[in-house]
Image 1 (cartoon, rainbow, N blue to C red):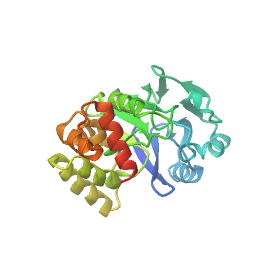
Image 2: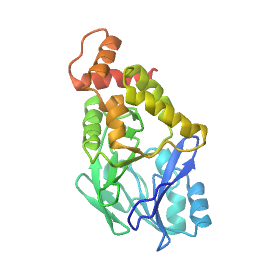
Image 3: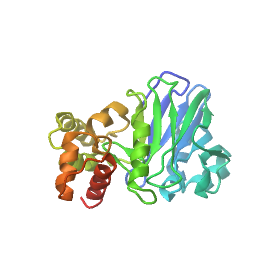
Image 4: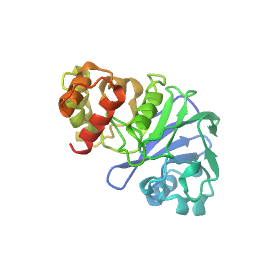
Length: 265
């Protein structure tokens, strides 16, 4: 659970499936909540009812069923405002969002970024008004990793990650899967001499040993330890070149090489 200084008093991970988090943003004064990517309605309903909260809003990042599967039941039960990407074909979205749009939640303005790569319709929600700033990035940027390229190209994803990594370095990064230890295991192979990464592995493993989420991360921590944001760094370039069997200089090619490596790791 995270607390931030605003009338978004709480950001709580609702576990779903085997490794999803449905993030709940809570206005504790008005007893209202927004959830991000509710793939399953039941854990959301249980959380809302056990905490006496009304669901007023839903943020959707992309069309995959583990992020949208609970929409129908939640809409029927609560009639929330549902924000999401327009080209997705998702049933139930009431407010379509594009690059440069904003969505207002509990008095705070969220900027919308189009971040294709994992899917073509993927968007992210960013609020700079909270302390710290907060980013809900779905399956684009993971802790120590990034999403698979199911629909987009390496160039698309590289550009999308550059967009997110340019945000305020203190930004709390809320992705939607507990993939951190597997991602760190790969990161160690791709960036083996990164001492900050080695320290992070110990710290995140300690959290998991205690049954705690590794999330949220921060933009700065990702810049320091996430190989997919470090395609301009010598260690990652060397690892990618060794993997491909030839020298690579282009950042997109480095990205494409390590993303393919991760797919088969």
